[in-house]
Length: 229
Image (spheres, rainbow, N blue to C red):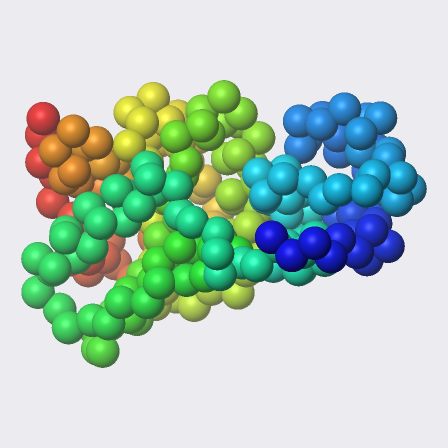
């Protein structure tokens, strides 16, 4: 970590992340005491927050600030941030499953500050880009808030009708929760993928929503087959 912590710049980003919310409300969202948050806003803390805290701030900023911006003013190098082991295992599983899809595609890993950690681009066909967002293994404790944040991120991002987005988890209860709280008014191709963490295979993928321009049967060609345990 770089020793340079720009308290002033961080305070500006933090105020932008708060928006019209009170410090008390925002502190609860990012699981921080109101007193601690106040010290950061008023530049009374000499050391930067942890990367985990910065991630929570970015996720709860309603897309007003990015993790990249927060890391930069806090002196962290985004290129040195490692991907959690659980997410890395899920990424490897998805890569293996993609290798069995009968379509030509190129794979792109996103940087650690992106909402999507991996993207597959198809040369031709009804789907052009397939984005993957991997849920960490500590998400279930705040599942309702995380779901709202993830759906807000989808709403605020420009997506095309030939894009597909998949949320990926290895936690069956989390998979079931998303299934029970699926969105019904988003014009996009959205699915949820459950990974078997023991065999590192795709247990199932369920299409939650399809864009009006792509029939369900067509999107099904870009869906991983189920592997019952």
